[in-house]
Amino acid sequence: MRRKRIIITSVLVAVIGVAAPLSLAFYLSSVRAEQGEQERLRLLAGYALERAHRSIASASMALRSADALDLAPCSEAHIQQLRRITITTRSIDDIGYVENGLLKCTSTGIEDEHIAITPADFTMDNGMGLDFNLHPVISGGKRMVGLSYRAYKVLIDPVRFSDVIIDSDIQMAVAIGKRGVLDTLHHPDPALVQALLAGQPAAYGAAHDGSIHAMLYRDGLTAVMIEPRSKLNDSLRREQLLLLPLGLLMAAFIVGIVVWLSRRRLSLTGELKIAIERREFFVHYQPLIALDTGACVGAEALIRWRRPDGSMIRPDLFIPVAEESELILPITDQVIACVIADMRDALLADRALHIAINLCASDIETGRVLDVLERALDGTGIEAQQIWLEATERGFINVEAARATIEKARARGHAVAIDDFGTGYSSLSSLQNLPLDALKIDKSFVDTIGTDAATSSVTPHIIAMARTLNMLIVAEGIETQQQADYLRERKVEFGQGWLFAKALPAAEFLTFYRARRAPSST
Image (tube, rainbow, N blue to C red):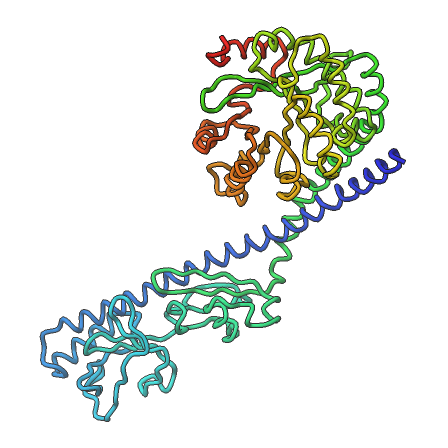
């Protein structure tokens, strides 16, 4: 049954391993093609904005030049100067002088008709007034843009704001911020342009799905570029030719890994049985440090497996298989034997020293390991309180069975800790119902200390919860001094991690321990 389950799982993972990279390749091709096209559109928008800025700057300079004239308004000399300004400024078509809301004269002469000049539609940051939609007689009714400053007003042909060369299927609009459109090129949909300027393209409707767009804002002006999505086809094919081979290679790699892992997993149970018979397991010790003093006060016993050929099998590979096949029970027994053989002298010499042994869920539910441990300790002189017992949250799913084992263990003198807290199934209510001595904060939460990760606020809550339940706290996976300082400031008693030492063979751990033992233990 287990073999069938592994084969079915492997096939499913292999299918996903093929589909996922190829789907990702197609998705990234589409994203990269669209991003590349948007970048090209932004480049064209930059040219348009540069042209529009030059036109406005030139017209503004003409207005200021007219305002600086020290001549009688609408005199012959004044009109001649206005004519000179109009001729020498390419961006304007005419300039006029306004007095009391009426146009008095232009570069063409005195204005005989009674033409009222209304206030500008919009005032720019440089103080210039702007009219978006003028239809003066001089232009034959054609729409013009007006720019005014004090008593003077110039007329600008809107084409001056969009005088750039772009493909005929690219549509463009140049606007003042998000207010009024100065001019367009190739007739973009006004509703779409307004929706994009307002930052609400979704409100435009489904028709927007058929186009891509880019916007560029600079110094008060906005350029909007729109083109059909069909323009992406060529660049999409180029991206696919680049990324699909990578997706195929990744898919082949994943399938190879799945086949390799499946073979290992299918054969690992048989190898584990042989390894138990040959006693190929041994223990490394992860030092436990008192954070307030920096002294080594104990260690966590971690199982290791070395094959006869010298190769090492990672615990995350064989422990799940051992748990599924119930082979974890004799492995735990060998760990207990190794701890007593390795640490007996040190434990007898220092009664404050303790070693933590990890228990599987089955041992927590049945309590079997307690009798094994009692027999192993009998006659060694090692005290029960020097052997801590640790179990992950999976071991506490059956709360009533777990409580019975914990109470029995504590009655014999052992301290019991919950390991990797926060990654399993425990709830606050279940913890309150279990007479635990210590809580170990999982490395994944310690890693978020000092970061902006979403789970960074969880750690102080775990500490506060442990304090409420009167538990000792052990922080796992401490790798930086910042993490250690943070935990020490919050009165976390113990820590372990590579900041202090990695898991060490017995002899190296004893050397480390003697160098960092508590002063009272010397």
